[in-house]
Length: 119
Image: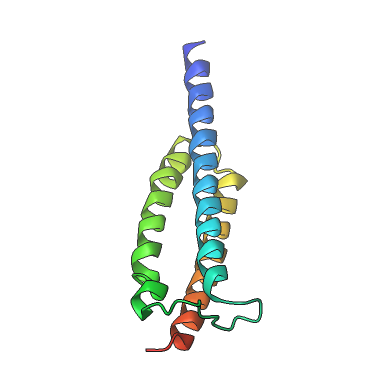
């Protein structure tokens, strides 16, 4: 009976951490969409605001610092989910694939924006 409770607790923790990893990916997706729609139109062309902004204001810190921060936050949830899962579930693979897709889109859009913002 005690062993089955431990197994159930591990399963719940795996679901919690796996769901949290997916929530981190969803928040990262929202952050990417929110940032790039402010500066790019639907044809991926830079649209300057009425008030001229400095290049640093548009680009921020660039792709890598923000991506590393999100990646490490995602790992904080993904690694425990993997360790607590009794069976390596599809949920973990989905979170990893979604993070990869959003990361590639972010990197691509960062390159487009960097090339088009005037110096």
